[in-house]
Length: 364
Image 1: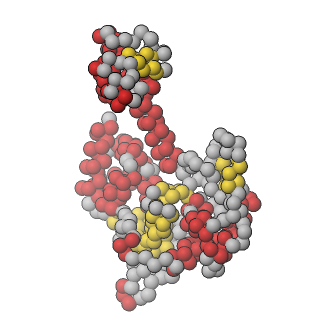
Image 2: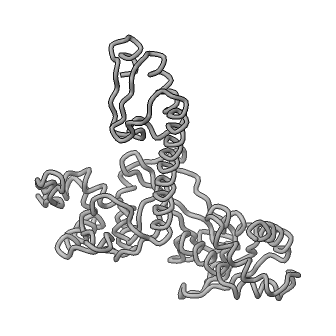
Image 3: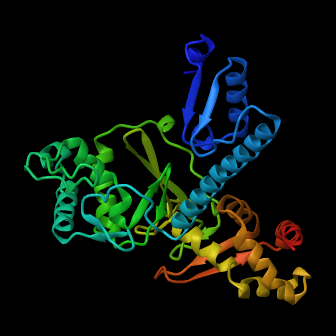
């Protein structure tokens, strides 16, 4: 349309309202300047009083500012809502995956009994060595639902090998969600257990050769901090990745792989990295942890424990992880995986307290 206006082919433009032209102040000003230079009359159905007079131009700029402000507020609210849902393990949007239905009230995932049985059967067959191509030959059907827009049924076709592979790679069946290159916890009920899921991943990974260049370097803020409950050696880091379409998802673990002292690694000692790291973060979100740190020589007044706790919980996870790597000396884990004893570095007050204190002062 702008090209046609420049060519003199249009002499009048109609729009319902100013924000239908643009929700950006800069773009609105530019558009109306082009209209005026070309001698084009703009007719706004909801703002018939806006013309080319200086007063109308001022009012137009004010309305454009409100439109841009509204757009930015909507974007901000959406971002805040998504962050809240992610933090609390909630589902964001999209159709429910096979094996689950969306609760009509909460919109969160609830298991579909019939489909959940089929999901467990697919994982069981994958663990025994059946390939996705062999599984799709069983003739099972995918999820079917009715489109809200057209009212037509969608899905219900036979499984393909690619769809079976995507199902086997999806962490949603562990009660989690894929989040870019990582995995975030969910609040829905898992359909398969961790052992079955990992066994299926190992079977799939054996059929797809990978190189070190294909693997992403994933962060481990507690690298070299965790102590094996059996041999008392430091746990090593372990990762494996999987591809889902164009997305590569990494799984992080701390496990006993050390051969120090001539001893073989302890079998079965493996901890999901996120769960351990989140437990430590939550410990620092507890006022009692800060109080203990203060009482052991941090040199701060007791009444600052609440403020330090509030500041810590307000930090984003990357910042918390960066600080964890500096202040934690070691973490002794129990054999039952239910308890941990955190030992902080002797000079933690030289690294952590100035940072947190500075943030606390800014927050006041």
